[in-house]
Amino acid sequence: MLIISNSLTEKVDEGCLKVTYNLIKRLKKSHGGAFVITYERKSELSDRYMELNKLMLNGELRSIIKQKKEKVLYVPFPAKPIATAIRIFVMSLMCRNGLDVILPMKINAEGISKLLIRLSKADLIVFSKQSENFYKSIVPKGRIRYIKTGVDTKKFVPVTSDEKRRLKLKYGLDPEKPLVLHVGHLNEGRNIQTLLNIDSEYQVLLVVSTLTKDEQNSELREKLLKKSNIKIFDLYIPEIEEIYQMSDVYLFPVTEDGHCIDVPLSCLEAASCDLPVITTDFGEMKEFINKPGFYRMNGADENGLNKLIKSATEDEHCSTREAVLPYDWDNCIGDFS
Image 1 (cartoon, one colour):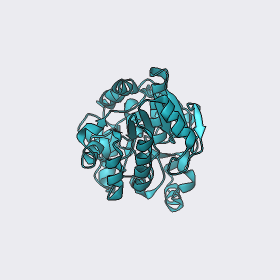
Image 2: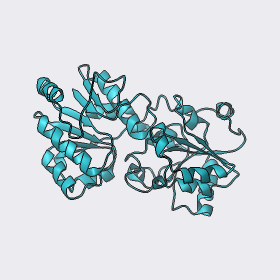
Image 3: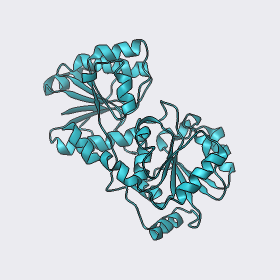
Image 4: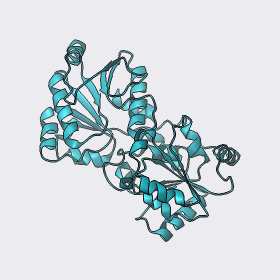
């Protein structure tokens, strides 16, 4: 198997990067001969790093693809629709034995972007029913595969109340107050301003990806930090599972396409720790809304949101972990075989 990606990096603390890292790590293990080429970003999983231009034109790359004589798996980092479409088209011209393209985030392709994806003859691998339905308008059904992905249910596990208390103290939080968590980028496109509506009886923690640390909305950050019950962690946390384990509720307010991968990995990780999850019906989250422990968020109404948080913290029958077990990485890799 030949894999090409610019979504592998050393610090894996962002949804698309985490999905790519976990997927390729497991594919290398299950497919002993997998050869990984990376560009733009370097990673321990890379067998060869290359400097590629925006059109992916490179003599060495073409030579390796020709030499391998096998279908190529391409995992691009989300970019503007036209840029992604051009690269998929160019890659398909080089990959005479076929091309699979993993698209963790739905591309809002229109016009020329749609045409290039259709003409590429690449097979698309998507992670949500929403994306599967969207791409059916661009390519034939036989060129789309929907795969459930991808959470490490062995790493993200529930903990006891005593351990939850210990972890809160470790990270400088009040062990007596319920903790509402959100993990992701700090920008208004993710509807983060919703956190401002959470009552002071709850402490709120926002963990920001280091990938976009320099692109944060400074005005929004300042507003958040003016509230005494809100804290922001914008550093790399290797033991990120501890952040979920010490929390009491996970809040996912994202509504707009293009601001998160189709299957919000943070929601899966929170649920794997058996946290109640308050979420919009973004992407694949539609599949979870009516399951025990998942609460549908309607807008950013202050009273409504705090009522949801109260209900979630008092939920004695939360079983969100059970709902995400089918999304475990072992099942995902099985679908690739």
